Image (tube, rainbow, N blue to C red; front, side, top):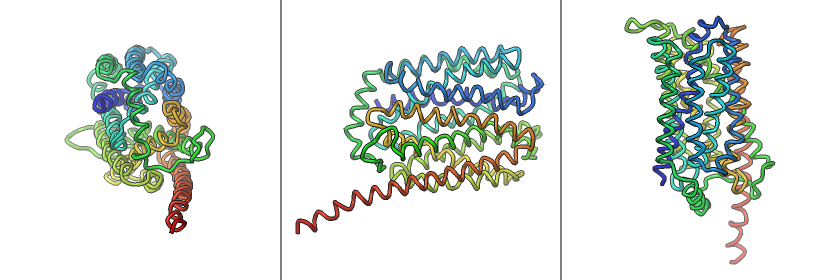
Length: 414
């Protein structure tokens, strides 16, 4: 059961992010065809990324109502259809509309897929990491595959290839993902072992307005802002500042290859976050991971050449180490029986509200270049780190309060 959960969700996760990030990989080529500047392209990207986050809200309900397998398969089918529409878009307006529909379709994935992974009973952090690695592969391969196909056949062919891939994944997921009944049984079994496996200290009364949960949701907005802003313009930042030529490749080709290599370091980040989640208190694990983001983003801004590659890789490593940690926090801090809906809210915050980084970062990049844009993202990273320090401090107070009565029991009976 757990192998089926991880395999089906991982395949769909990789495809989801490949469809999500291909526009960023093709951004400059699409801009050349339609005569659009970076601000306009950032706004077009924002439309699709907002709908990507917005449909996370109903996706949590749909997953509970019809089962994760149905939602995940439908997500892939709809994504395939709308990827075809993107490929056929004759102008920037219809391209924006098609990207909005594509974003809405693939935005259904995360609450269903992640809630299903949360049912894994043993080494849940590593299960989240494996799922996240699959998504990182989709993110990392998008620049190389998308640009490679575009160089040979044009950017529209890249979306046609995604259309075929998504249809194939829909069939695979439908065949191997657990049914709704099997998923419900797995959730019940997971709940029975929560007291043993849990490495967090949420409030005794878990409800939607609990301050720690609200703080996690607020942090999700910051994570989404950094995620969207950095990944949308990382290829462009590398093209503008890398300044390397290898093996006779053009600077654009080198930048695309480096973007893929940098994004692949996210795999190590996922493993790091998963291992920490399975070994120490998760609130404690969140603090050092998020503290590194702000300085790495600040160092990326003015860097060139090899230094830019190193700082970018360091940022990607720690940024994606957050994912298993935050998914574990949401699973444990969510109200009882509402994990799917809590993931829906979280992904709406991350991908929906956080998506406005596309427009904001696009305006900053157009007026002042990508360097000030990365400084802006560093400031958001500093705020995110402060939020995690507050969350960890609250969890530590609750742990001390729980230990107090237990430590006093032997003395009272002696």
